[in-house]
Length: 580
Figure 1 (cartoon, rainbow, N blue to C red):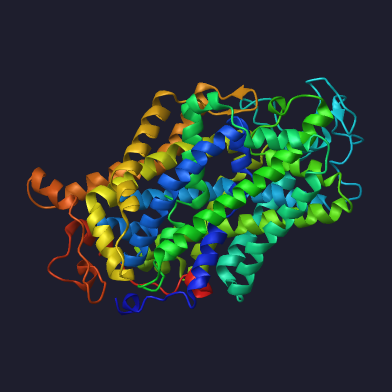
Figure 2: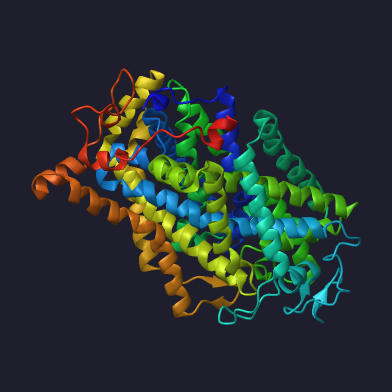
């Protein structure tokens, strides 16, 4: 425990803020946000998105950072100490991070594929004079036919993915994509294995570089014909869309996905903060910059939408663009009309690579650190070296990603994304809020904040934690179950067996919550009533050392927590700590 008593902290607090921004601002800002916005009626999505940011995003991130900084533990041990009954929530955050990292890296694979293709002249998606193009392909000529498609759409579908007509046809493995997927995992491994020597410089670069490219793209796109129509679609709400529960669920899910609530990354990072760090300042900085980036990316994407609708002679709402490939269809179309298109393409896809690596690294690190914290002795005994264990984690995740690089891969990707990023995260967020806000209590949370910063949480945060966030998440969760819509890609609705596979994927993370509760009640002494009372009793912290009693070996050790800590040996610094 001596090593844990001297837990490392960030060398400069600005590093945590920048790392938090780097973790939150990722591919989701330039891919998922515009995609959900397009599906949800453009401007109509901004209303619930901004509302969810204020009443869910900011308060819940504030809550996570406060608990992480005060307990100085990652999500598994942190949540186990505040509410033993719901210790499974911490385990679920690790599970969902691992599931997401297996398919999220496929988006990085696509970025690398486009990056390598960007060195050709002309760009392969610049015209329709290629072997994979169909007779319906259009370059710049206006075409009023609804069946027409642009060169960039056809490059994505017929050249890179070679996608099948449905999920029933698996097709063969795309060896080019598979090799690039392996390359992507090698890059991730090297990030974790070697670390980043000049962390500050890298963070400044990865934080600023995307904005330079996005602003340059916006300046170019607004000059294109039809751009105003796309921007109008983005900012003018279709109010009838607000009556759809799906829009509100998607807005809440995007806030959780983009900021990283429920995934454990920022929770773990905050545990390395100085004890008296101003949590609120970091929370507001991360949330506001993250959302502004999403909106900036929205203007860039939808101005390009307007141009595409002009080319095809159809309304923006009727564009045949859907799914995660949206960003790989719209942005390349914008490059084709810029001076030096190869340069812009290389810069943009390199930017996507940087954004993706930041987020992917954080997700893999949650898995690695949690397992090392929990089973350090066993893992070192088996693998001998920590580097080999990290290699094993990356290797297993790479294998799980193989279905996503087959010809059926886009459907597998969409299925995993739907059930993980939208379905699972809502369950996870609900139980995390219950564990911290209700079981641990808003008063204790405010007391912790006062001990650290000298100021208690204001009435807005206390109200959000106690009532608004739990009730709102519960309502969204109930309505999303009642009005659940099966996953789909373009016009293809997944068959029942595929939906079943999706629910298995969702349960792979959710199942840890009831399992953790059953285990806690099983190991606690006394009658069921006594067990239940003990299980929702938060674990006290020693005010002097900020060490949980169970880790100091005191008489007040909580039986349910002791099980977690029985095999605990303080590991050497993780890669993320080394980089700090």
